[in-house]
Amino acid sequence: MIKVIIVDDESLVRHGLRTILEADPGIDVVAEAADGHAAIEQARAHACDVVLMDIRMPRGDGIVATRTLRAMATPPAVVILTTFQLDDYVTEALRAGAAGFLLKDTPPTEIIRAVHDVAEGHGVLSPSVTRQVIDTLLQQHQALTARERAQLESLTAREREVLHLVGQGLSNADIARSLSASEATVKMHVSRVLAKLELSNRVQAALLARNAEAASP
Picture 1 (spheres, rainbow, N blue to C red):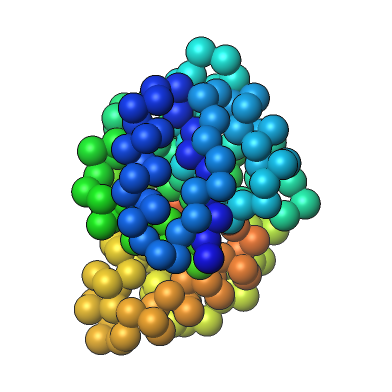
Picture 2 (picture 1 turned 30 degrees about the vertical axis):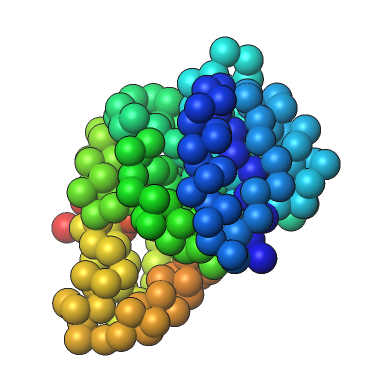
């Protein structure tokens, strides 16, 4: 059973998300919160696997709450809920360790699948959204550190291929088709890449991949 906390300052949004998620027998909504402060309190009171987090709330924004949640001893995966405005709020939330973000008008079946995916350690960014987020963050390009270079060199040839495609914003299904591999195999490679690079989500991996390619002669 995947335990979820819903965080949004609009009660109607929380009710809608609860209705969608509780239609899945494998998901249990253990709590709701109307702001970042309450989200942290609820996460401490109820062990959870996934937090659906709004960003802009009147008391305690989602960025600070995300950073705090990800610093917990057993951190839940955090998925940002947004109307998709590529601004500092979204990018900072991703840098704080969010697993990705969902548009608030995402179809119910995709929201349910996203919760399952992040509970298994995968990101939940659609390819088009991933590319736009990466392009926005790359405007703040950062040089590779010696540690990052060493970590990249530790990847196998296949893992480098997968990382490159992640950097292009491709989904696991698209990568599987590109490499003529199964989606399960791609998920395994992505998990290994994240572990070797010591990253928490595929957006961070994509940024590193693009930075590495930009730094290549």
